[in-house]
Structures are given as structure tokens and as C-alpha cells.
Image (tube, rainbow, N blue to C red; front, side, top):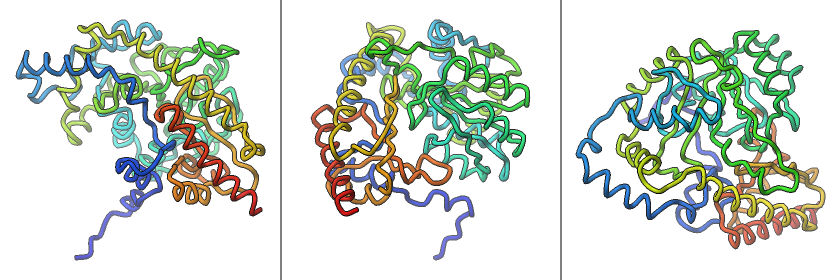
Length: 405
């Protein structure tokens, strides 16, 4: 039969990222395209012990749980972990989700109607763009510089479009790796609160901060949520994830904010999947709260290794093939956002690179429009040897294009 899908379902049509993931799973591709942590740094032995202990100790670990998430894990999260970030959450103000992507999806379902205007950083996360397009939002880009969103452009876009929401990642924006300055954070927060505009702040990459290992250390800044310091009726929904710091397969993210917002998202979650895996949440809580695993020490390990890989990638970008390209070296996160030599098309380069066995994320997937002059390179997932080989293969493709021109 001929299936008549909804108009918005066509936003789910296959993209280069889907084919990249398929080829990577087959083991036929070196991928510098995805948002993946380093598998060799997962706490495997402790997770194995934790799984055995949790499952054998209580059959309830395999039962349905609360839609809001496993209570002890929510208490751990809102306790010392978030309080150390200056984040105070009211009772009932946190929801555990299936990764941060689900938090974005749930909020969009309950807050965005088709045709609503939504502001985003440009470039921004491909996942955010997919969710907003599926919801039928009109996506409005806001320009930024090395310090974050430009307040004057943000003010102009607010006045012109009267948006309902701003999606932002102040700490190591995906894909640019931008770290907003404290001044810019305050300016953006003041603008949004004065116009009664909800901010969705994604802090999934905020702990991947290389300040101890760089020649010019940057400082850590408070989140927008912490700066506003309003747990009820505030203008910021604060979301994050354990996927980038512990293990993605545990699929545990969270959203913190006003009980009114969280309550509506929890209601939508009951319709979507009732709950995220209570087993995974119990495993994660046991790992964090009972075993010898120290999340802060583990993050320090990740940051040392990721900084080393970033430096290796930056050295490889000094080779002749990249002489007309440019980038800003981030102080954290997982990505390097590269401006290609003039006239080089990201989609054409991707096709040539795929033929050589390596992938990256082309700029158009991270942009409201355009973006063909940029590519996103992930440095956290590939090991050093794989990163070296992958960059060499992309360099070959760049050289072939520039030689023809």
C-alpha cells in the first residue's frame, strides 16, 4: 500500500549522519562525525560488578518505576553534584530522561506549537534542529562570536520575531565548542528575562573542560540557571546527561527547572515511554553512590585524554592541505568546528571522504541554513591511531579538491 505520512514526518528523511552511523556499526568506517565518548575509558569492571549487585539484590530493579525517575538518583543529582555547580532545585523540579535529547523532545512537545518561533545559536546541535523541525517550529538563528551570542542581534531577533524559546549551550556549544563569557551570559539572561523568554540551557558538555591542561587556562562560569537562581517560575530549564561522562548506553539524562515545567514534561513522558529504564538508573546510582567510582576523578581522566586528542587533531590541521582553513581551539567539549578553504563544499568533501573510509559531520546539518563552508570533527571517540589515520584520509580528499581548483 501507499503510506501517507504526516507532513512533518518528512523531516525525518535520511541524512548523511544516519548512513555514517550504519557504516560505522559495520566497522567499515572511521567516524569523526558522531557525539561519542571514548569507549576504552568506560568504567567497565565497576559497571559489571554494579550490574550483578543491583540485579541480585532486588527484583524491583526490573519492575516499572516512577515516571520522574529513580528517587535516590534524583536525590544524588540534586544534592552535592548540582549544588557544587551553584544549582539549587526545588522538590519535584527534576526529571530523569532517556538522554538529554529526550528532555529537549519532551519540552518541545508541551511548549511549542506549529508555527511558534524558536531562537537557536547558529551553528547549533543537529539533534535540536531535528526536534524543532519535527514539531513544526519556525527556527530563527542568532549570531555569536567567541564570547557567546551577540546581545544586539539577540535583541533584534526577539523584537522582530517575538519567539517563545531560546535553545542555548553556553559551555562548549555543539558544534563550535564556544564557551560563553560571564558577561555575555549575564547579558543574554537579562535580555530573555526582560522579554519573558524561556531559555533551554543544555549543559551536556560542560564538565568536559580542559582548563588545567591548556597553555591559556579558561575559567569555569556558572550556568544561566545558577545565575538566575530561581527554582520556581524561572526562565531557564537546565538539562544535562551522564552519556558524555559515564556511558551513553545507560541513557540517563535530566531536566531541572520549575515544577510547573517539569510536571508537564513528566506527563508527556508517561505518554512517550512511561519511564526511562529504572534498571539503568539503579545501576548508575549504585555506581555513583556506593562503589569506589569517583565521577569527578573520572571526568578529570576524560579531560586529560580528550585534551591530548584535541592537540593531536590541531597539529594535523597544520599540514599543507589545511593551510587556508581556520578554527578556534575550544577549551572543552568534543568537537572542532573547522572553516574550510574558500570554495570547498562540505557535502562534496564528505562524499569524497566516505569513499576513502572516513566521515565527519558537514556544516549544513548543524545550521539553520547554509553551513557548506564548515565541518565538525569529533576528537573524543577515535583513538589516537584512528584519529591520525582518519585525519590523513580527509587531508587527502581536501588536497584532491584544492588541486583541481
